[in-house]
Picture (cartoon, rainbow, N blue to C red):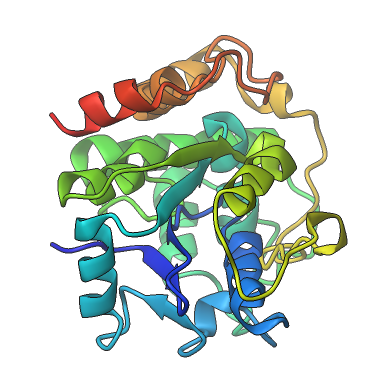
Length: 272
């Protein structure tokens, strides 16, 4: 299986396990800058040089050798399941993507037909009941995760634990895991632990939110989208994320973690 979703700087200063919808664009740009003294011109996910990625054949042996020998600091970043699944809905389901089309072509029409999801019309330019539509999408996301029907779960709403686990299962070990909600503190701790060709001043780094503007603005507080059934579905899908990464499953309105991440517990759980 190797190390899918892993990026590494060309200087091999640090190894990062990408988790979709968890500040991955900003983190990737920071890693790129730390080696080259400039940001990548475009979406960092499109970069095919300047950063080692497991998806690039030439990078695979270098990443595998580094990770198995544990030569560099390895880290990842996680996010509250409530805000992550909500962000996925507005970006991937409601939004028009960079190529001018809907995400995954026939996915949204299928959701409209089979689950009654409303996305504001073909161009997404009319008002719709965001809360009702999101709750119907949540049923679909649960179906993909629990039964893998009508499709396998997408990387943007499959659980964070599943992404993070592949790194451990294949011989890696995290030195740091931090929260998107405390991004500056966590990213600074990573930078403090490594030596890079170019210093990074986090206060001057823009946030590279590549999904921003794809979909409509959220019209309500986060908690309004989650009734009792919705919270049950979120727990069913993401209970491991809540338990391992210290988030509050009982209060969708509290995006902040309520306890520290225990790295030993994470590795023990993911190593089973």
